Structure formats: structure tokens, C-alpha cells
Length: 182
Image (cartoon, rainbow, N blue to C red; front, side, top):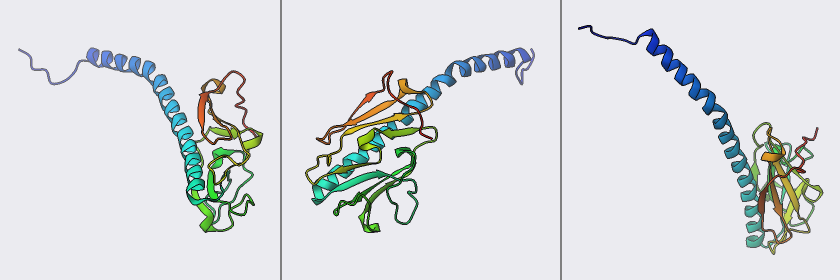
């Protein structure tokens, strides 16, 4: 009887062929899975930030605003003119309604930029900022934000918020604009 201490070349080739087939089928689905989870996480982070700003306005009894910022690492981040919300955002106390934090004490939260190849753009009413009145209602601001990635409008998510301040999301549609601003 012969003692086997290894694999034959045929066994190795069959194993490599099976592994290659599984990788070919599985990797595209894994990429979609990762992109879908990233999309959900980023949309949920933004919604959580909005809920936080709303609750702070209700709790503290003064206006609280979110705005996009191009330099969220600055000692005193300010509302910026970056490409969009994907560059990061801040939540701040805005008692004097000047739409900017006046000191470091006004800053309640700073959020870093989103993942590369992602856009988060608002329509005219929410292109740069969202404010909550002490009542918890949006301060004369309502609109839509669209989160897109390299997959385009069919995989986008629309974040909608009316004057009531309660947020909802929906999938993008054929007319959803995912064109990056340059």
C-alpha cells in the first residue's frame, strides 16, 4: 500500500478551478452588498444628525442648524461653500440666527467627509444648511437631499423632510439627478 503525503496535480487544478468559479460569481455580489451597506450607513448617519439637531433645538429652546463645511478639521469649523454635504457637516447653536457658529462653544457636532465617490446634494432650500426652530420644526426650510454613488440614480436614496421636521427616505427614480457638481 502506498502512503499519500500530498495532493496530486489534478486535485490541485480542480480545487483552483472551483475556487475561481466561486470568486467569479461571488465577488460582484459582495461589491453590491458593500455598496448597499455603505449607502444605508451614510443615509442613516445624516438622518441621525438631523434628529440630533432637532432634539437639541427642542431641549435647549433655541435655534440649531446643520450646514455643510469644506474644512471640518479647522479649530472653528464654519459653514462652507464646498461641493456638497459629502465634504462633511457641522451642527451648531445659532441663537443669533447668523447661520454661522460664533465660537467653539456653539459647535455641537462635527461630521467627517463621506466615503469617496459619494455625493450628498440638496435642492435649493437645503443646498447649504438646515435649521431647526425651538419648536422642533424646520425653520422655513424643507426639501430633498440625494445621496448617490458610482452606480447612478437607480441606486440613489432621497432624504425628504417637510416643515414638520420628520424625515423620510425613498429610493431614487429615473429623474433623480446624480450629476456631480464640479
